[in-house]
Image 1 (cartoon, helix red, strand yellow):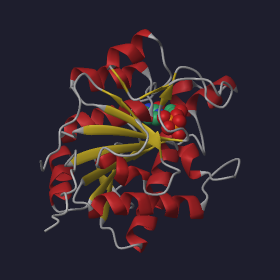
Image 2 (spheres, protein in one colour):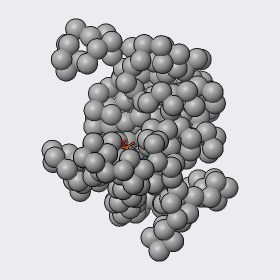
Image 3 (cartoon, protein in one colour):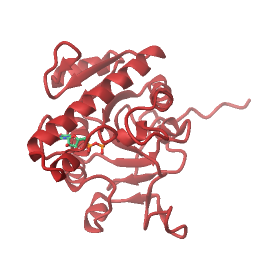
Image 4 (cartoon, rainbow, N blue to C red):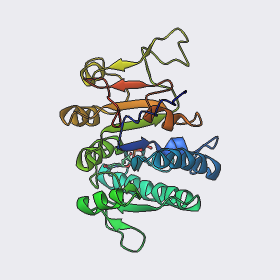
Length: 251
Ligand code: UDP
């Protein structure tokens, strides 16, 4: 008798960070509904595997604090505008997920009671336990930070077993693979490697926080259909930034 090998789920609770730009599709600015729907489908697949999912979405498709500051705006004010942009993206993603039957909650680091919950750690954990996808909006709630750092912070607070960075490329390379086709793809590296080589995977504060809290960071392409789910099973092309290799939670 042939017994089917059970699928090996590597993580029970994860946080996916996607940049605002990942939701732009072919546009130069803002949100592309088809792209958001596609990313929502990726999240739905992973949720259906039984993984508890948190999301952090950037705001770079709408506004970046640094860009505002370079045009004369006070940096802190510009950063608040950037944080509000992340709330718009979070609400758009919530809408897409709920339209395909995934229960969600948005929690914002800046209180906006009329449109979402305020960030309350224990409440967020309860939502995850009740199988809701929790979308964390408004970054850390503080200027001079980024949503990468917010992602590492929330992943630490939620006790996530991995922090995923969904990008345009399928992992970390020795050089930009678009400009240097001969660049080497890394399957595994340590947080220290990323920091010491100054690799632009996530900002240094985010990598340091993930390192301190022993959270692996996984870089993968969010644009290849089914890829997020494959990574949860240790399959597909991606880079794991961690000190130890992952072990299946249901092995
Ligand atoms: N931001 C901030 N504090 C945070 C997170 C974000 O001030 O904790 C602001 C900052 O201005 C940033 C903008 O929000 O430029 C959008 O976030 P980010 O650049 O991280 O988005 P992404 O590049 O991931 O789309």
